[in-house]
Length: 123
Image (cartoon, rainbow, N blue to C red; front, side, top):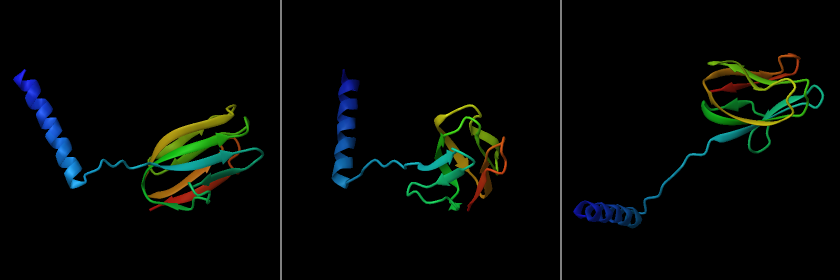
């Protein structure tokens, strides 16, 4: 019983300290990148503002890829990532995948139609 009372009192003291000092819990949101492949022979990768991705800072990202054609796939290749297929041929829909990007140049493309491609740099 004494242990429970001590634990409750300690927890209450920590909450009070946090409130009095203005301490807040923070979380770091992972940036989302929006990829699209199809219809037709088109591929794109955009940031949260809808701008074409050209340069990114190394770190963690969430790729949200919308595949609009079952004849394509959305594949990523770069430092530490060897042909990571985010959507497969035959798939139509949206997939969400976490990716850690290292410094270097990346290519996103369709393995079936390699001329459907784009690149970006990570610094």
